[in-house]
Length: 111
Image 1: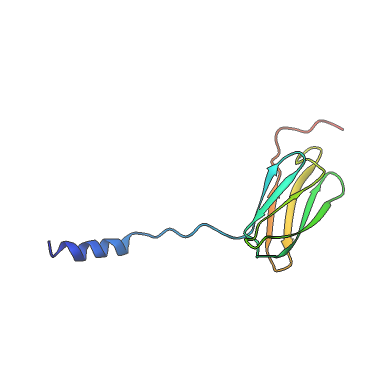
Image 2: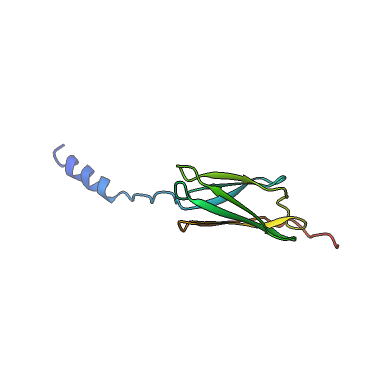
């Protein structure tokens, strides 16, 4: 029984420890139409510029992240590869950056 203690201690030291999940800036499309984007992992109270680009002129919104580094922003547009927003980027004044791309599904109809 005395030998079991050191063996168990050595076994615990050899168990690989997984790295913590990435907590860096992240964007996700919460709702396709009207477009709602949610951000997380930004610096607390960071002023963030969100640019939604697509087939027309880019749409820009400014938000301030919460104390926990999150935000939510809505656009009067749709996340639609063929007719709307294709790419959303967020750039914070304290250096945080993130991007979300709209998935392309099928072919677009001819104009």
